[in-house]
Length: 268
Image: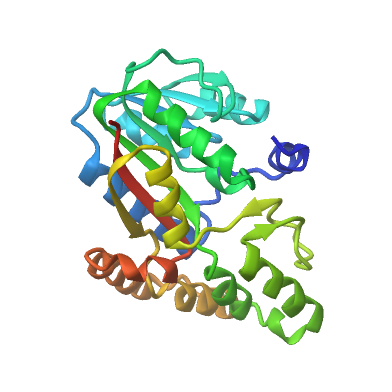
């Protein structure tokens, strides 16, 4: 694991990320909606790989699931133990300690975008398949590569020639090597997927029945831009943006328009 990633999450608290903004609440609501649609009934055993401070583990446990959270950041494990009714373990998505066929579902909602090497991402997906019973659920999130254009557009940073240059390189390769010019330093080294790339990795990992969804849907950047520049709570617009995401679900080609994509597949 890139030490910059560990250092970033040790110093940038994530517990409020999906609650503090309208786009965060949109991401949480849509992730819950999609997972509840596909998860087996509680009290199924769910492995939350890269589960961070336990945001998803908490609502999953409240829904009745038995959740074991794995994360490479020690600070996240301390937070998750206090925040969610789950067990925790320091670990890496590429080398899980769980036995074969020991869980009903595995979630990788964070690991793939912090593994810049394609081989490592496929290894993580294969590990998830190994520990999930045949026919069980594997759900993996990725950051959409083309969301970079929308995201930068909401903060008017494209007026900078240097930002445009670096953004062009990231649109080509998908690799985000270091924090951007954004003085907040809100992100770290990462890989951004295209929908075709994510589906190809699922196939190469041996997953079956792969389906792809845009988590925030096609209108998320409008929501983010208006909130950022006005500071308004945007309740009605959030509802409309959420409905736009639901309406886009049958059309996987729209996934690249979202900020995040969710791969849903079955363990062989």
